Image (cartoon, rainbow, N blue to C red; front, side):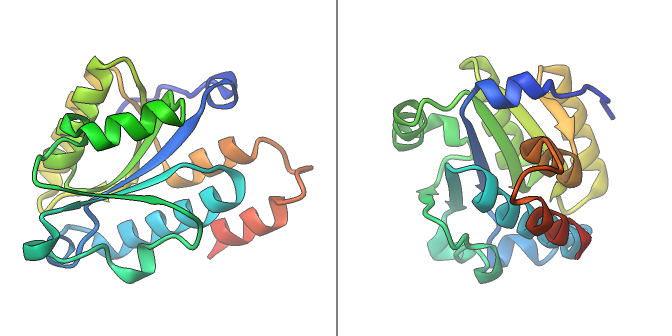
Length: 188
């Protein structure tokens, strides 16, 4: 694992987007550690809706693989992108929306780490985005695929962190009026 730290200035001075990749019914069933992953993605969504904006959800071939599982649909506005490509960065709709919102940082979670996440991340890094991987909010069917993909993405320049760490970085201070709400999200 890579213990790179995310500079607070990096998060505050740039526009962030949360990418929730392919958390669909048929994809999630065989995923290793899926209950923990779902719980962490839910925490990310709940905190992100309070502290940030720009949520993107992708669905891989939803006609065959189902739609995003209902508990992981944000209450706030989000952009949904249906795809057949494994990499979101190959889709003009995604690139256009990211550019329009002036996004620089991509906070990535979802499924599967070694397929759609890895291909999206490697392509986004090549396009000059900062990519932050939420390691405990993503997974694969096999833990070895997840671990090797994390290594490959971090070696290519992605930053590795966890759900709780990124939520506290977004919050920045316990003096913030939303802190009690954020703390409650973390503690559940």
